[in-house]
Image 1: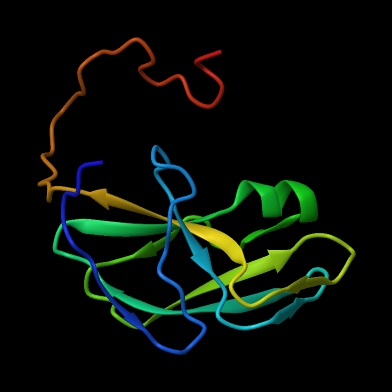
Image 2 (image 1 turned 90 degrees about the horizontal axis):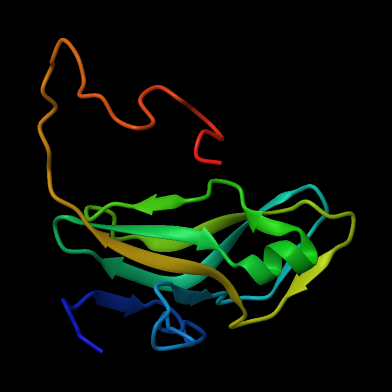
Length: 145
């Protein structure tokens, strides 16, 4: 596996865990809860990870829900994807919503979200009179089949 850059991370409490991949080819790093939580039906709960990271310039961190938690228990992030900018170095907290009618008890160090890192370049927006033609042009949602 190639390593492109280092990410500085602070473990803020004794339950904090490094984000980790379950499989070598995974893109997302699992993020873990640092406390127990009772996720009440139809309510938002901020889940503390116990970690702070320092992203390099040009790198964005995106917090995405875990598909298993969403499909099995109807629990997902209320602001998915959540964006972590390089300038933010506070604790990563994720607002989860329980869409079900059942209470969900989250354990300490339970995998509940994924962190995906993306390198980006700055752009300049250039005003033009017309955009180049493409296959899709102005065809919107569902236009690819």
